[in-house]
Length: 567
Image 1 (cartoon, rainbow, N blue to C red):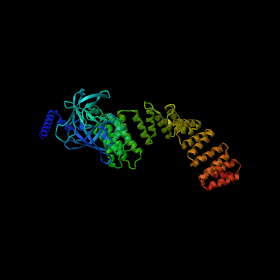
Image 2: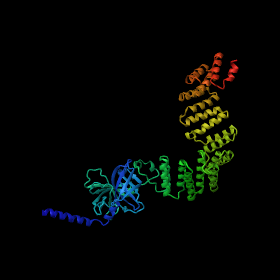
Image 3: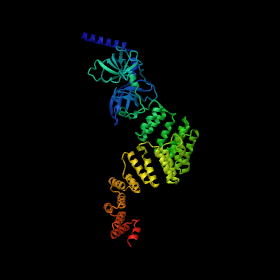
Image 4: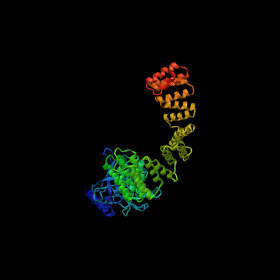
């Protein structure tokens, strides 16, 4: 009995001595350590773990594994205060670390100071566990080894016991600065050895412009913070714009504007996004408010005037049921010319031409487009703009073709898919100008530019050019391809029959047309063409019977044939 009493007394004295020897900073530092509760998409608890603050405004560190699959998370301080995790600031799955921001509602929180220098091998270190008790309990150990991470950071092996629920707790230097974050041990010996990743390394984790597609970050459902600079944040917005819903993207834009209130780009982007979901005048009023704010904060006013004009122009192109206030093409042109008065950039002049083109002021558009063609903005597209404007001004096909030739001359050789539409357009113009062989060549170049990825309509158009160029075999081959792709289209079968008749293959033409009638017995044009083929075969009586059937079915082109051959 006396022995037991003596042992108890000794243990109490040892405990008191241990507390007495604890560094003075321990009790205060432990207040920076908190517990984290992670919730899944069904709002059920997924994980629990630890973290600690490294800044008084709520920046904290923990392990990535804890957050994987999280849809929301709550930090619980040693005083029991619950604080939601607001945003992820960076993560690395290889070293299992995450940096995040906790919403502390404008208050300051106890935070640990990150050590600038690594502790020496053999130095005493202290692990601070999460605790709701006001005490100085800790685990003491020594630095056993240190290896390099990313050349300038450290990964530590510690002579220290790792107890349950200590993962992601901070390890401190003797003077009370955090140098590492304790990690799960992959080895069996957790009674004498544990590991820690350098706190400086975790602090280096950040959101980059390309982080939106980072698989590691995508595994965390909590929203990601914007990058630290305006330029990087704008790239991040661009990456996110095509992958978020309109509502989520608007939330991101709101955050960008809150973080960068003097960035005209934020207001312009929000106005551009809002206009697509605006159904009422009150919502459009917010678009205008953003455009006005962009002009107010912008350093380059001409750029804002250009973007305002472009937005109004595109709004009008969409042909709204009711025009919003004074948002007309004239309004867009007026805004744009304010920008041109400040800085006459070629891209502004190009838009001036586009607006005038939309207004059907083709003479004005032509002046703008021709001016652009004297600048460094000259391109196949700018020559094409002139060609289309000239066409609508009803100039001769030969003059239009001159501009289309200039357009094609500016294209990359060999032609790439981006240039393919210009080849199609020149083929059309060439055909209308009576240059059928040139049109066929353009269709051939188009085919190569798109790597043969064409549809039945392409073959029909090329057949029309080949037929005019008297390249009958090509015409036959193209119509067979069109029918192969779209066998139900009766126009293709009629066209194939026409080519066969042209080359004297009348029996083949009749066979083709009977195949068409098998699809649609009331296809009047087929009877007329059968009659024409039969005339070539000296089968006038049979031809007249088919002409009569065509007339019965309403073919408007058969009367002249009946008048000539069937009286």
